[in-house]
Length: 228
Image 1: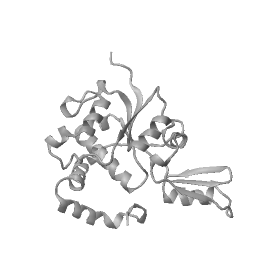
Image 2: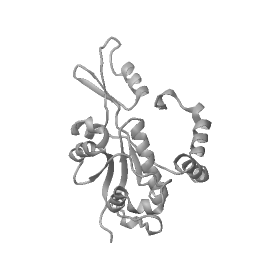
Image 3: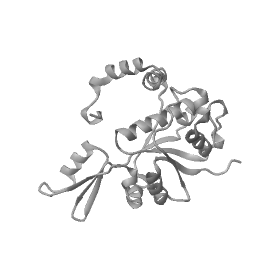
Image 4: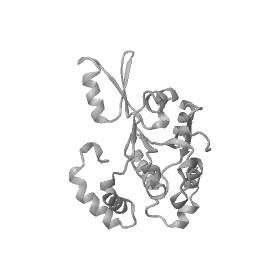
């Protein structure tokens, strides 16, 4: 019989974020693996670079289920693998690199419903003793209208990253299973070919393919999604 799985393993960015996450976790059910900076882009790296990369080797070892043909779900140590990055463009890029890694090296992890994204807040809104958290600019504007009186002078604090949050805040907003928001990473059966093409164009070695993809999709991007 395989050993019982812990509930979740979170990959968090940076030492400071990892320190806060370790203090915020439930030690009985949650494990945290801090990752420094941006991981290797496996879609554009050769096999030798992938094998030699210490961060990815540590990640594979921590999860326990192996990769590609050696993948075994029964050896998976955690029911949920949760990617937890800063709520900004840089954090989204890191999350994209990690999803690409799992998509290329552990596709069954996604197919079997084990991969998730945490949704940390970007803002803290405070008026008097009342505080609420907003995940992005649109949510912030909605909360300013709905959670406070029209004439209230609301203090708006923008988090620079997970490491800036106190452990209690990180637990309350992002890690407590009764309060957090998780997004499950899924790959729809009808979209597999399109997804494979998009990953190759965006993350692969051909810069011209990436430029063409961005040019084609630029008109659909909202101002909130652009890092300008």
